[in-house]
Length: 489
Image (cartoon, rainbow, N blue to C red; front, side, top):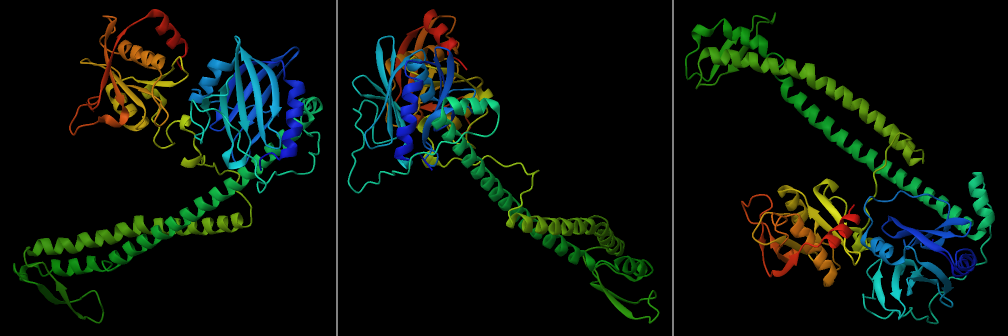
């Protein structure tokens, strides 16, 4: 559950007295909708957590450590380029609403980071001094270039006013106890959400285990049914060795074209008469050997199929017992949970391609433009195909050096957005650098949206068809290259 209005007021009051005047040293984005800010004040360094996940929307100081992705998402990179090294001059709250405004000054430029903790609409926006939106964490009604206006409060809108936050000291490590003494409101929230996240994680693991065991049990039952059907099919060949021996003693009597053979079964004390079917298109020896071949199928089933049936039956017994335990809430400690897929609707545009579509990081290099946008550069011809056809989105910008072999280059763009001039020059510089025109130091680069790039049937790796292309003449400049190489990841 996200912060209540009262809790929001309490934590912002604590933040205003603890981090105002501090400098932002480092910004991380450990999860798509969560950011952390390392803030240094005289004599101390603390970590501010801002989360806009609908269930866990919150803002407070934290003592937790998070694992960060190797490549910063676009929003994080943009904040780094504008806010790192900046000084926090003020923190205030929108009256009667769960919206915080953090004012940061860097090189005489004023920025306002808006942290809206409003449930499903929770979001973060970076504004300039005139309150123009420069970038948003999630897609929203506010677009880049719009003037920021807080959502209007209405009489029927719930204010979510709860009793005052009860402050409790976290009972764990001494480091956390010290953190709790220094920042009691943040420590209480930090502990609560850590426990809530753990509980939700346990429930998620239990659901995954249940789904996994039910699926495995269903597969095992299908498997044993198929094995039993195979056993039934070969069971009729049990006596075929005897039939082959009987035919062997009557080979001279069998004529080509004969469809059956009637003979006495000397292996049965009752001496019954048997009629054995024959293949009229084959000779007597082939028909005799065919009976022996089918008997060997029966033997093979006894040797291989039956142990598999027994093994699968034991597996079904084990899975049914495991399912009974899980339905009682007893989890398997050895089960390794799969990471849940983030719903497409909750993924920010900056989070990159959904899991399952993203290519291995080895297939492209990653750079950050002067405007904080992500630039991908393919490595090999096959990597170019992977980057263009699998990683890139339809509204991303695609670039390539004209008339010469080279890397495909992708600039990650918001839907409907236009590429900033400096980003275009940065991407074109990288395109030229990773092409055969590098030695000449200048050349023409074509660009278009990714949706206008097609792969023709039978085309070699890296070869594509391009529509609606534009061109830019670019010269390699050492200062631009050095800056881009410094921002490479």
